[in-house]
Each structure stands twice: as C-alpha cells, then as structure tokens.
Image (cartoon, rainbow, N blue to C red):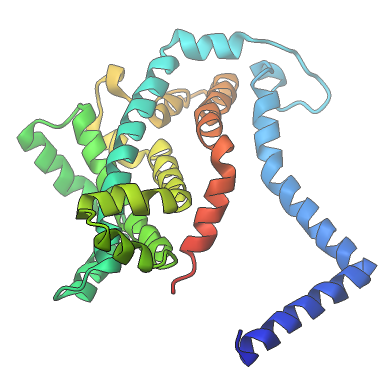
Length: 289
C-alpha cells in the first residue's frame, strides 16, 4: 500500500470511529434512513392494501371493505395473458441483450483496434436520444418488413434500447477483472470462445446479473414502443393491459391496484434471490480501473 492509500484508509477508519462514538450522529443517520425507507415503501404498501378494497372505500381512511373481486376482474379480462406476453418478450430479449453485451464488452475492454474510442462513444451516444424520436422510423421499418404486432419486433426493439447502457456497465465491470486470466487461458491453449464463456463469464456473473436486472426492469415497464407496435389485444404487454383500466369517464381503481400488485411479483420472484450478486455487480461496475 502506498502512503496516500494508507492515509485515505486511516481517515476513513477515523471517520467511522467518530460516527460510532457520537450517538447523535448515529441517531440522525438511522432517522434519515427510516424516512427514506418509509418514503419508498409507503406507495407499495398502499397499493397492496388498496387491491383488497372496493372502489367505494378505496380512498377512505376509516372504512375498509375487504374483497377479492379486483383480482377476479383483472384475470377475467385477460390480464394473465398480458403478463405472459411481457414475461416472454422480456426474458428472450434479456438473454439476447446479455449475450451481445458480454461479447461486445469483452471486445471493447480487451481488444485494441482502430476507432475503438469512436465506436464505443457511438454506443453510449445511442442512450442519449429520447426514445420517442425512434418510434416513427422503427414503426415505418417494422411495417415494411412485417414486424408490427409480433413478438420478434418487440424483442428487437427492446434489445436495441437496452444494449448501450448494458455494454457500458459490462465494460466497467470487466475493467475490474484481471487480464492475467486471459493471458493464462491463452497459454493453456483456450480459444477466444472458451476464454469468454468458461473463464471470464463465471467471474463476471455479478456484473451479468446487474446488467440483466437493469435490462429486464427497463423492458418490463416500457410503454411507448408497446403502444406503437402492438394493436392486437392478444399480443399486448402488461403496461398496455394496465392502461386499459383508465377509462375516459371513470377509473377502475380497484382493478388498477390489483394489477399493479400482480405486476410486481415476477420481478420480485426473479431477482430477489439474486440481490447479493446484484449489489456486487453494481458496485464493481461503477469503478473503472
């Protein structure tokens, strides 16, 4: 360790000891943490409780009429099909996006070639444009090649919008992986394919989980492209199904609360068991060597 690193480490330890010895500072940190937690958890709790209320008692603070009719209503109108469509499209798109991100990030991180910086910058530049400007050209292209009202068209669009930041996140994580692993694998006679998928891939797993989580949540809640490219009811995704409960004159708040509660379950079931790897991936990917 260098003198500068020792100094920084000593300052950090000293600051930590100071906080621990100051009960007021500890109490203040705990209070701020609790307020932030309550601020984020309150809407979820309110939605879950509201999903079991009738429309007449939805916004009442004193009257509570328990009912399961809201859940029966959303599945009676086909909300289960919307969830299946979203799951299928998102999972396939996540697999493709993650595969391409791993390969592309490995090339950007490990290989040297002309215009590397320019090409990598162009990938990031794609994330800067508002998605709404992409709707018209994509709609025209999909209409010409027959990808409107199709799973393939939505998967193609979702892979395209998730790739730029996914590649950026994976490159940042790869910079923390020692290059000696690649060199040792080459000396052992491994091919490029074997290096990526048998040597680097297991080491990158936390970063891959973080990238896949980002891509899935981005696609799971996407509304604009689905609204433009899907008009057939049997192919609509979950956000479109949720929007149908907002009428021009009335709003079925009970169904909206129930549908909102149901849509959180797939994301929780898929990624809650992976939260440890997710945290590690995000932390490592945020620091470049």
